[in-house]
Length: 205
Image 1 (cartoon, rainbow, N blue to C red):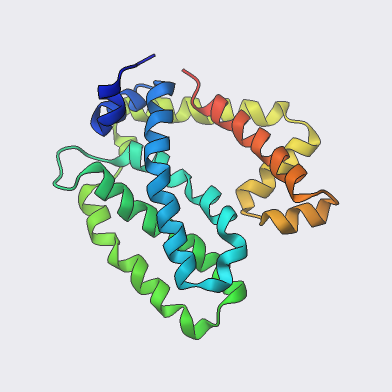
Image 2: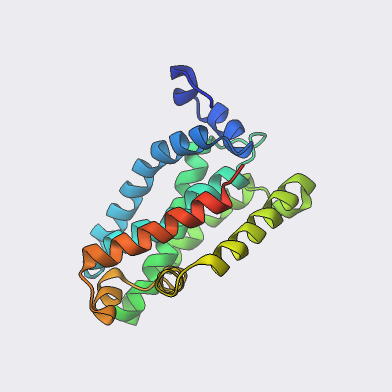
């Protein structure tokens, strides 16, 4: 395990260790960037009030942008990691908001969401690694993670498989709970346990 105050304050040290599958470093970097992600989600919700009931769902779905930033950031480019993550998070959140907005926002108002998404594209392309699968080590780790994920799915119970499918489809918590006759707390707990199993399997050393 990597420790020390200096590591906690240095995102590049955390990035390096996270890419070596150091769980402590990954969790530390995740916690540092989650605050940025929360602000991006809050700002987006403030701009599109009808999405307020979906805030927690959007935050959960957008959390994958943290892992994506860790995997694709390139230190040899001009943008710092947090700047890069901010652009990536905005694009992910706006795309998720666009998905939800199809149900609650008039089509005439969705053009501004498209414009915001496009604004972030240039910087993202400038600092992201275009095709990380060209890196043989990355490709090997990715395939191994996929295999562990497939093995995990075979061992899930019927209710866990249902929760995983709902998570992958982006099914809103409220709808999912009502559909299954559960309280939102009980449904959230079931989905959380499945997500924890997935993370444990995929990030296994």
